[in-house]
Structures are given as structure tokens and as C-alpha cells.
Length: 528
Image (spheres, rainbow, N blue to C red):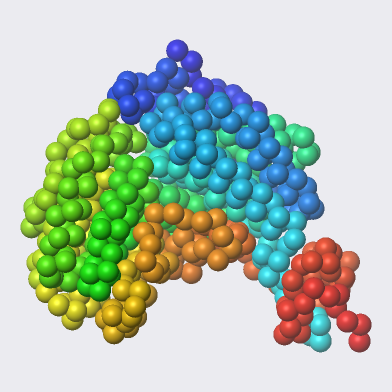
């Protein structure tokens, strides 16, 4: 049985470990063959020292070389597609096709290339020039970034491949990836290809480093260490808030994606107009990928009436008839069971499901629960327990004003959606409810489920707490996501040849947008 090495200081070596662990195949519940080290603080501190050295070198590296690295990395991933898909399938149980091979992998290489284009073009850094006062500012790299990857997207959110990784590298920051324990082998394969691509373009080999697991104490030390510039984290609220507490104590920016029930409000006119279609959309969205998406519709709000009762009957039948998928790990299975137990204890009534098993490996029956609006308002916090997986809670309000009260009690979420009649029957209700919902979600949708997250410059994959740690930032959407890993660098009276190229009078690319004397422009600074 092999114990896989860590990637530290530009080389693969045995981890200085306090123990080892193995990932499971979630479809068989059997451990996979490779062991991975649980790194001691010795590994962490060596990685931090090397990242500091890499950060210093990267400050003088032209953005073009960083862009070329990201593009070459994407090419190497595509060239080794089969190996990535096989490993991720074994570690997560996610289908090889279309989920991994045809969906998540192309999305991953696409966002790497988008990050490369943004690094090359430079406008992400918001170069700003006051020529009269000779004061100039730009977002520069914040320093080493620690990325904690989630369990549900081994490619697109992976600590050595995903959105946080791509954004940090594009900003000129080295990355210390902390693999998710559910898919360490997949993360290792990405780090292998990243190291090769770094060597091809002469970038510091410590630009990308990888450890697999640490103790909780060492994870908190890593986050709060003076050498760390910023942190990107996607995972459970419980663990994320512990990291946030120690990061906040020492003033480290930490960008968290934590928890979201993604409320979907279905108005009466929409049910009258196209109830069956909405049932199908909801069932498909909620059960897609066994419900293991951060934007899974976990809370529906409906207004009582005959159409609502028909909707619930058909939705329950759809849940019952649909196959039960495999959950990502034993931990996800136990967490889902515990969350549903809490919802039922608070007074939610199971319409279908609410039992372990039913699928291959780690699984839980497709579960739909109902609670009336009054009871929800009595225990709003309990009924917003995130049931991460193939489950959803329907809240049935007595009337529109009660629906408004329900929305007022919502925590922050990544998404919120409203289905309404296309002929305008629901417009008055929409205008009553949406101003409330708008303040509680990062992304507002109309007439479609929230599951998909397009890699678009206009995307916001963020939202008010506890969906994320800060409502002003997004984990998806370049160039905005890159700015999380920038620090505002101001230059006051600095001699022209000492300025970053993007702040010099001549536009270095001819395409970079710069705010020059209050006007956005791609021109050179006019001589006076």
C-alpha cells in the first residue's frame, strides 16, 4: 500500500505526518488503496516559507507568463482527461459521463482560460491614475493563498484546479492547496500537471503546493499565520466558521462558501399556468447529482390552495419514482440523516423518503418534507437547517403576507428564485415579495431552478452570511473573483520607471481599461 507524497518546495516528498488516511469509494463503501499523509506543522511551515519566496518572485513576473501557465495547465488537464475522470469517479461516485467528463472538466479548463485572459489583459486590477496629483493605484497580489477545496466539485472547485485556485494564480499569488479528504487522489493528479506546466514556463515551482490533511489545530495555524495572505474555503459552516474566527482575529481576509438552502418561491398563477412543468423542473433540480450542489433548491415557499396541494402530491410522486443516487461520502450520508432528523423534530412532516439507503453505497431516500407557515415562523432557524443532499422542505404559507414574513426570516443564501405567471397574474405578489428576497440572496432568478452556475463575468456565486463570509465577493465570475486576492497598492509621486507597468503612462497592452482622471480609457495618459 503506497503512501502518496506531498508537494512542497517544488518537489514531491514524503509527508512529515502525524498519521495517514484513505478515501472511500462511496459506491462500494470500501477504502481505496492509496494512503495519504496527515501533515504535521512541519509540512505547513515549510510550504508557507516556500510560498513566500514564490510570491516575491511572482511580483516581477509578467502577467503574460502567468497567463501562459494557466493555459498550458488547462491543456495538460485535457490531455489527461481519462485519468482525471477515472480517479474522480472512484473517489466521489459521480458519473463519468456526462457529469465529470462532459460537464465539470470542460468547465474547469474554461475557467482556467478565462483567468488567463484576465491576467493577460489586466483590467481586473482596476488601475487608477490621477495624473494631476501623480497618485496611482492598482490591485496587486496579496501573497500566498491557502485554498480549501469542497467535496462536491473535485475539478471545478478543487484546491489545485478550481475557481479559487485560478483566481489566486491570475492575481499573481502562489497557492497552497489543502485537498478535500474525499478526493485526495484527484487533487494530486492536478498538482502533478500544474508542477509540469510551471516548469515549462520557468515560474517558481512553489507557486503550487499540496497537502492533503492537517489536524484542526494546524489548519487554524495555517490560516492565521503571518505568512498567509488570504484564504479561499468551500465547505461546511461549522468548520468554516472556526477558520473564520482565527482569520478574523489576525485580520486575514478569508472568503467562505458555507451554507445555503436557496429558497424558491412559486406563486399561485405560475402553478395554475404550468404546474406539471414546474414539478418536473423542481424534481430534476433537487435530485440532480443526488442534491449535492451548493445551489440545490432546499426550501420551497408556496401559498396554500388547491394547486399547491396538487403540486405537492405530484412532487412527492416524482421523488418516490426517481432513482436514489449515491452520496459523496459516509460523512455526507450521516450529515443528511441528522439534518432531516432536526427538521422532523422541529415539526416538518415527511411526504416521502426519510430513511437511509435505497441507492448504491452511501445513500438516503429521496426526501420531501412539508411545514406550514405559522410553524416555520415559530422556529425559523431550525427549519433553515441545510439538508445537503437529495432532500427539500416545502413551506406552505396561509397567504401572501405570511409568505412575506417567511422571507423576512430567511438567512443569507446564494440564490433565490421566483416562479410567476407569464401573463402578469402574479405581478402584484411578485412586487410585494421580491424586494424582501432580493436582500437575502446573492443571485436572483426568475422562472428557472438555481442549480446551474454559469462561468460568466456577470455571475455572482456569493451572497449574504451564512451563504458566504462577505456579501461583496463572488467565487465564480472572472474578473470579479480575482479581486478577492488583490491588495490595493497606492503609488504617490513614485518615479515613472518604478511604477507597475499598468500604471505607467503608456498602456502596456493597449487593451487594459484604466480609470484615468475620472474616465475609463484604454488610451495612454495624455501628456500635459
